[in-house]
Image (cartoon, rainbow over all chains, first blue to last red; front, top):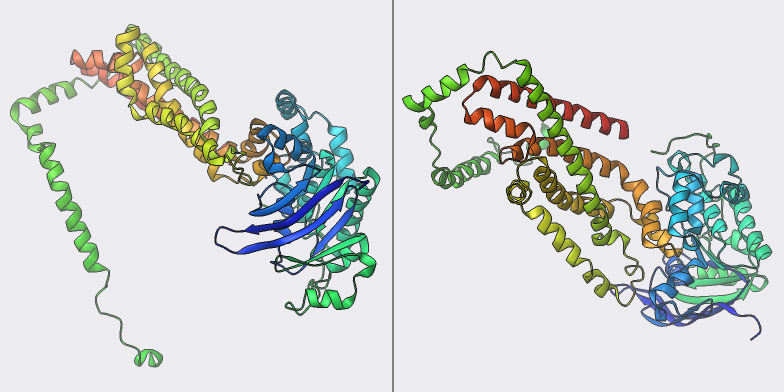
Length: 274
Length: 280
């Protein structure tokens, strides 16, 4: 094989402590530089799969190689170096409320920084320009010095994305990265992520709730249902019948914007969230 | 009313009354042996000899002693008490902070996954916890007695005693604060390759800081009171002066010192409240 694999799963299973099977012997591989969307009804195992890929969880059985390495066969030091190269965009961004946006973004590169540089950066931000540039990608460069608890849910989610962009990982995983954004902003933000991945030749695996977003922006789609791969196809080959059977139990195809029944109101710039 | 007519009427008497009465009687019954063991007998206070001694002592309280020399001495002792509390808390923090980092489960990298060796790594935290228990398990008064013998009478003994006991208390509470505050930020950073300390300063501290400061200020308030008590066993400060005056049955001096002490505690209370309001 010419291109190295960013992720390679073989019979990957995860059984939760209570005995519930979240992932049932799934296999797939993602080449370096590929952009893959994961769709499926809620409870299908999308988040679990991403958590395995970011080494937040360890599989019950099967193998998973990330950037060519088995994270759980590595020593603690080597695993930490591997983790630096993998970035996760969380569904709800893990930002401390009292932290400033600039610090939250710079924290993305803590894995590459020495402790002394990290501490010095708390006294005076080490790389304001870098943080501003990452925030500019998600249209938030004017909020550099705001506290995180002064952001709306959607803005916080975009700060989370800016942090991972600033981390410059080789593998970006995104767990419903636009769940708190309105349709227009969702479209824009997903296209930023996909562009960023393409320009930097970074692998991107994103789980998405909205099927139309996945089909519009990603060249490859993996459909998950009940912890198994229902289909794994180039976007062009994903037809209505496959989508309908994927979401058969739900009865509706989740499409962005459709869930919004209330008239949208623009979020004021300085709303306190707490 | 008509709607409830079919349903059984609620009991006329409060159904909780009987259990409540039983519980009260039970509590009193449990207290009785304790009163016997402590030989508690208020009548002793009013026996002629005892009452006289007390009355004589208390009568001397007014007016309080105001001789300039004595006031200067009280002033110096007050400063000494404050200094004991401040230095004691500062040293306690130096003991508590590293131990809290070592013993808290909030900064466990091996819990992510979890990694194969997480049980072994968790076991590594127990010696630190045992040390914290040992430090705070022995009351500061006992440490003070010990140090007065080791380093002699004076504030040094008080400072060392405070540093040890309060170090143990602060360490345990800090570790618990880290665990009880939102752990997601720190975990996310460690998942992206950050080290334990980096994750602490960027993920835990911003969440836990207000609670840590609030608890530390409260402990400082306790340290002011404790340093007065430790003075009785010779560990310097206001307490030592009070003990001297009490032993001489000099009520006027005791009164001045007690009033000063009261002021000091009020002051500590106000400072502590100010800090907490500023943080809220």
